Image (tube, rainbow, N blue to C red; front, side):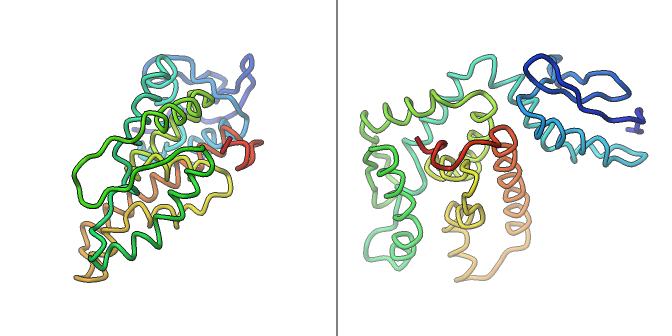
Amino acid sequence: MKRFYRDVAVAQAGAGWQVLLDGRAIRTQGGRAQIVPTPALANAMAAEWADQGEDIDTGAFVMRDLADYTLDVVAPDPEATRTTLCGFAQTDTLCYRAFPDEPFAVRQQADWEPLLAAAETRFGVRFIRVAGVMHRAQPDATLAALSAHLAGYDPFALAALHTLTSLAASLVIGLTAIAPDAPLDTLWNAAHLEELWQAELWGKEPEAEARRARRHADFLAAARFARLVQPIQSATALAT
């Protein structure tokens, strides 16, 4: 697609902010008004438009796509996203371990247990650790506490959290990653510990490495989106 605009600007729109192309407001891919809650996010989205050359790279609109996903999918029914996120808690990657006599179990204990224990302390819950891959339900009280916590997230934060959690296959990692000062690369490596372990044992596979790199970039983008929509909140505030 050829670039069809010259000027990119950001303007206030009611209680939110929007991007203007040659003075005209953009709509979401679903046809809704593309109004976001912070000028920081609007400026990041405007930069994606401003950085385009003569030909538009449709893959370069990461912040816009996350905003559209929020407005078109999450905002009309945020409870559906909260329910999906609670479902991740039932099968959280960090809870499913190798058997204690396997070498990988030592690595999991070192890398995963601090994250899981910190989440238990933060939310006042208990997660069941499982040896092997057979599913075991998490306690009802744990799911209720997590559901209550998620009720405090607006659609934009929920969209970021859903992306982070889906990519990590772990609600614990998603909730940790959404904090402004989260160690994102450490969390990403924890989410893909088994893949990294296998690569250390047998060598790296180029296609798998490329796929993981793309997903890592998506993970970092979702974390950035979370920070742009909640710029004044501290890690402590997000954790309560």
